[in-house]
Length: 219
Image (cartoon, rainbow, N blue to C red; front, side, top):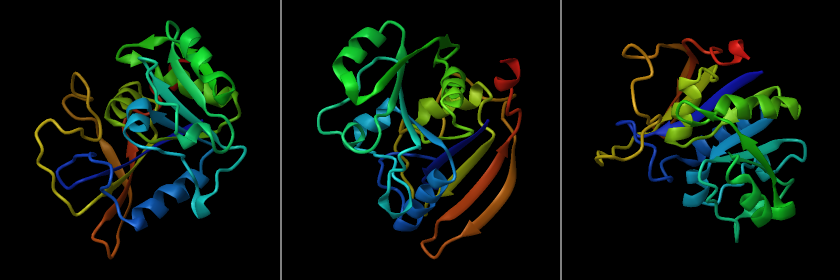
């Protein structure tokens, strides 16, 4: 199992609001989706928009798994194309929220309970479940807390990061990974694997994550 995380930030590290990237970055995201077997999205991202996790050419592959993770069980269903187009997604939630969320979603999704980790629901457990469904590669698409938990649990092997030529400066705006403490001592090291620029002014980076596989090696 290999796990990738993809994200776009401003030059000051913010990931919100959600219209940061260019069409070039959108194509980049869709290409990486088509290279992987599953996507995992935080419920906050679903609440803020209407993601469908489409690949290149706007297609939704029938065999590609689309998954959402929510601790609270509060996810919008009405009008969300994720529950209307393509195969029903997987919705990971807490054991306490599973019965009510399963009833609310019905046939629109497969609701799966997760154990709790140190920082909320265990992303590592979600990755293992996706592996049992047949996924050999998983793409984590954020947001900030999901990214933080996945990195802190050591499940992320590589990060695809786009830096947009924009500045936010908004105090308290979400960053690539937001959590209660530092990810390393004080930093988690990254090894640069690829770097290229686009005419849009965006910089496309690919990093290997230091200490990746920590969680997977325990299970």
